[in-house]
Length: 142
Length: 432
Image (cartoon, rainbow over all chains, first blue to last red; front, top):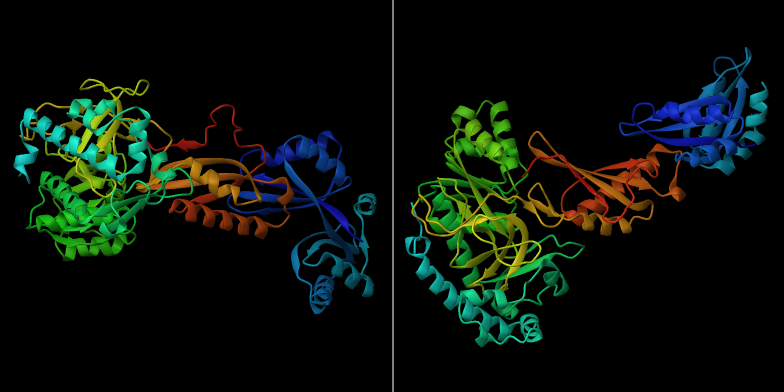
């Protein structure tokens, strides 16, 4: 299963990040997880939200460049070594990871958001290995 | 010292007579050897015989950079290629370069003019001069080189790009003169200071040109290096460096008037203005064989003074430049037109056609940043995609302009849309 990640291109200038968050707040788009990849000139704000399509529309209206892309939100046990085990499985199947960020919201369960170099293959690998993925909606309910 | 007293100090009457005789000959020459000029003259009903003296020059049509582009590469040459011994080229307004060709005699005239300029700056056969203009298609390097060699100075063809080698050799060779862009010389002065070499140099004069510079920069160069700095002017279409240069009195740049007839034109009416009034500078190359130009509009704004200079030279002097008629920029001595960036960006489908050039001067070196917007279809969630694109655009711009630029991808709609004449340039340098 894929989840839709909302990515926003942000120039490195004061207040620009909070302007993005203002738009999401006004439209009651709830942020479940995020990662900010920064370079000297710009940043990419990657968001897992409860309504990515709405978020994208509203941001576009306000002149932000945003896009939706397929990522996997993977459920793993919240214990030492489980992330390493997951990555080993993915590596062994010859898929690269473009980027990854995580959240742990339960005492015994954690979630990592992962973008694979081959988005179709990753889903098959995860299913074959009995690794659970969830949608943004499900994540929102936890 | 004066290199050619006969020509540089002749009376106004003598000069006018010489210019008249040369113009009459030139018009006859281009009419019979360059189709472009023949057609242009025929279009206004002008025959070579109608031009009897230099005063008749206003009857002749103008020539522009666009004419050079439209006749790319050799359409305006007046001689067959067998007579051309050298080609130079500079930036055109779009993708195509502006190409000029020189006969053997043209090169001799060029060296003569540069020799006059360098003599104005006090250079003699006893000097060791570093030529730190770029050698290549750009006229700066080879032009200055030939002139210095004609004087008999010891010429060190440094070219550009290696400041450390330049400063080391400046000390080791006991260089007494240098020819380069003024901003590069300021940079060199910093390198010398950093290396603690300032009191080890023997430099006494600098011949700077290829870009506009202010009186402030002039003073700064002179005080930092404890030398005399001179302003040399030229443009490749007309010849290259050496069209004009200032003497030790710094009251304008002496034009080599026996070879290049200057006119200052009212920007609106394109009629000649009086001495002291600002207008666009146009040149007629009175003696050029390879690519003679009739009333070539330089787009540079200046004024002219025909009075005799304190140095004894009678040649007309043009003032320090006051700006440009068009949007041409000079960045690190290279002519850059915003339209070149526009043409280059069309090739990059990932970006919109909107762009902004930000020109600045940091540590005395010109910087160029080009801001572009990503096309919506190419929005990405991966940093490396944007970085690869930035690199690609940088390469495209480098190919188009001949200078490197820092590329910055900005948010959509953040660049100004054209409303009438779009503003594509922010120049933070104070050059005029």
